[in-house]
Image 1 (cartoon, rainbow, N blue to C red):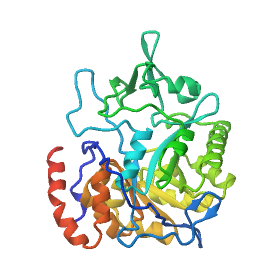
Image 2: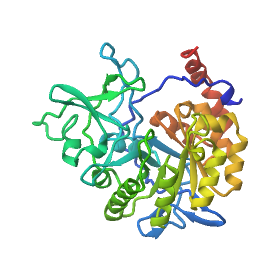
Image 3: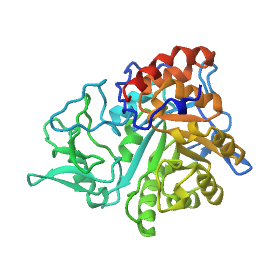
Image 4: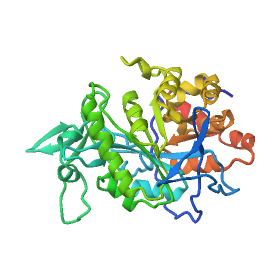
Length: 377
């Protein structure tokens, strides 16, 4: 069954609480990366991982936790979450909980503060109380101290500035989660997240405004400095939606793989390099990148794109809401993708690891897809 024929674009976000039981399995996982005709792999510190062992009971199909244990929803002032509980995204607790469920990597967004510190935060604007008003600012307008003063604090005796979130319609919403945690820097993540889980570092830039080359370099140089200092033996790869950023990332460091992010044509951008998977392949070839991370709908609506990417010699991952449905994950594994970025971490890890009999797995999860589709009819 082609999942694309059954999914709808406005499928409801799903957030989940991840199982907090510690995994006893060593996360000794790798996947092959390609750069033109020359095969490389994920690098670990300054040593290339040639023959990392993948336990026989585990699938080499990668599962990456989106912002840790999944992205958070926003809520109106009158509403409160009524779905499954969630953990604050892009935080140490979220990353460690995702790692303990068995994900191979956690994906997160890195921006750089005014005083040059890489911090983990997704949105273009952070909304916080300032002199009795909710004010939205770019991360680049804040110092590290100011950024960390927003929201819950590590020190229980301190009260952080009230945190809100700007919704897609421009309104300010409550940022409500079941399990809170404070914001963190990239340095914090390297030092406090279990070392067995890899990091997919998305280098984040403003999607709506032109980013000058000086800002690209300022951001990338600060991030690479922290990676050089703190990555140790952790598996790391970079990604970005910004085609010039991935080009710079590849030119200034040969150590870690670089992937180009694309929505695969689901949106229309002034920069034509961002408007299709075919254009993403061209970006990868010109910049010597190792892979593509595409919005999942583009791939499932046109499965031939998988072989197009593979024939060009690149790794292929996907992201998006459809990746939270077991059938979508199973179909992508059967199509030959290398992995998926998911929000429902616990459920999707279980599906990915049940690889002995995909046909049985597909049948057993049909009900969940049908129920999901009913919610958007």
